[in-house]
Length: 329
Image 1 (cartoon, rainbow, N blue to C red):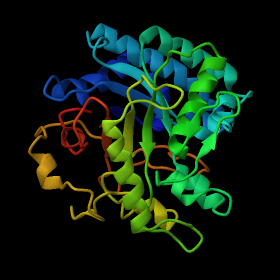
Image 2 (cartoon, rainbow, N blue to C red):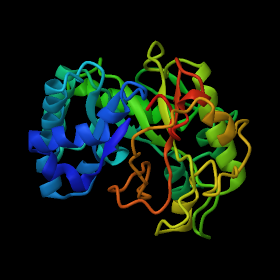
Image 3 (cartoon, rainbow, N blue to C red):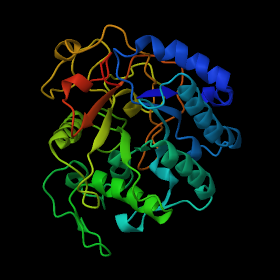
């Protein structure tokens, strides 16, 4: 995936501007780089910015029109990313619904995405839920460790980890609006390896367990509510962003340090991934998270260090999808 930051939304409403951006930032890297989606804007609907919100769908439509003109619409879809803060209810998963104040906007976006065949993207961070309520939320439950889990009283489905419960809450919200067949992809998830004194759970061991277990999901298929649907998950982030402002955790989501050394061992290295990389690939959107409960993602800003994503899916290998100039983006 390649991201168009929130600061571009107003400009991208003009199809000519959208075409120019695609010609400059995408076409030079095709077909050697496999680009599957453009996400237009990051968590726009949770910033309460009427200008951004009103520009979001027109920008998405304009970018899609540009792809049609350039003959790229069959290989590249257009979508946008959302924080879990768009949900009014998320527990139990079967009760998932979108916030009433933004439902009309989401419905219009879903109509566009349904017609164009793009996935619904969610930034999901169980870490934030645990950090805000460590006495009531089990650490094992958020880290994919053995635990008793929970049973959804309506569906009788058992959940042994929070990420799957969050994904299925989104599926339930989509179904409530009539889009039960729309795929849900996790555009960001991760765990910080270091934090401030009040950032409970932010340490190397928890980060290693969380991201290591997310990577293991590549051998599994589906959630309790959608067991037949492939899992598509992007780990945030490939690198620590050492110059990023905010709490200490914001600079410590990476699997690797800015100098390329691993923060902790997950069984692979940058040198092994580079062998499957393309020498030319488009610039990646920062997509940093903002620390809101249960989600992540702030408006993209001028990069202070290289971050990137690690893609985990049921159908692809780990190394070939490391988003450091990877062949598949």
